[in-house]
Image 1 (spheres, helix red, strand yellow):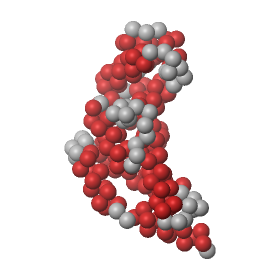
Image 2 (tube, one colour):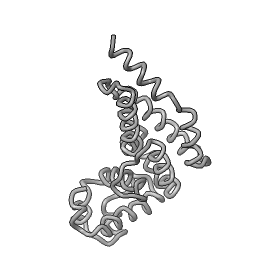
Image 3 (tube, rainbow, N blue to C red):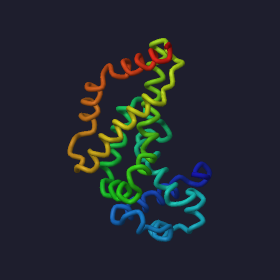
Image 4 (cartoon, helix red, strand yellow):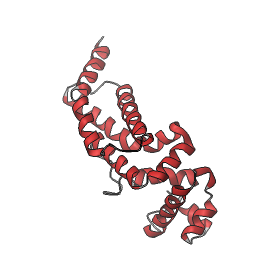
Length: 193
């Protein structure tokens, strides 16, 4: 997003809402910038003021949408990020599924990575500092946990989203309890060798 702070937010939001309505009915490849601007009553220049292209709009949607309860704020915990993402998906299930099937898993994963990836990395960093091993490379453990959560989210999305996100997050926390410390401890052992 280029100029979102200077032009009224309602214009940006109108573009996003129009896109969501269109994405609910159509796969991404069938939606054009013209469709979006016609649906919300702005011109192409206004669209391009906010978004470089449609993929930038989708990326912004996944960054802003799950954080709607507190815009601009990254989730404090990976469970909070997971719940935000799942709740957002429940609000717009057809749109999210259409985006998912249109762009493929790898691209879709990039869209949601900040929502769950940043909190995971932050949690690993906090835990490694508490354990007195701040010098370890956190990229591999972060990748492991991100992929696990992304896989669970992806399965949930493809299988009708029947489970409650808060309940899923609580169960994941229970299953996951202690594994982060063990993972970091094992990483620390390899650093000390």
